[in-house]
Image (tube, rainbow, N blue to C red; front, side, top):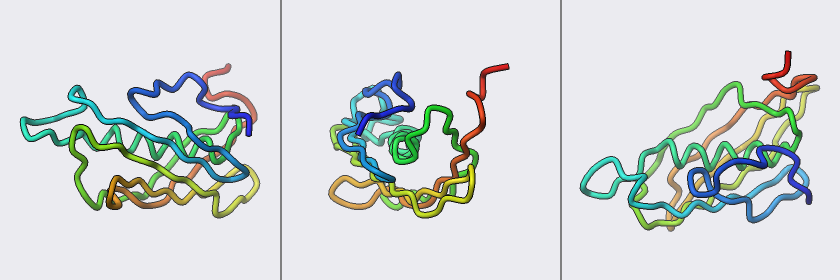
Length: 127
């Protein structure tokens, strides 16, 4: 499937799309030292969230898609050096509002929840 959204997302910050299909996407993020928040190697949750967000956007796969709400919980920490896989599946479509289930994992689930997406008529930065 041709990815039609978030094409310039930095793969080193939010991961790389490794699979995209109708209503589904998978993103892989390789965590690095620069993502650590302490001397123990704890990865900042924003990187994990970013991978899940990218997966949700690609699961919707519309050029104008935006995230307007997220209900996620972090279930386990991520350590520097771990590879995070984020999967997203569209669960409901109501006109321009799309609900996407997300899960991110290493050897265990590290984030799970729902992301709520919207498709405006034009790009949010267009006047």
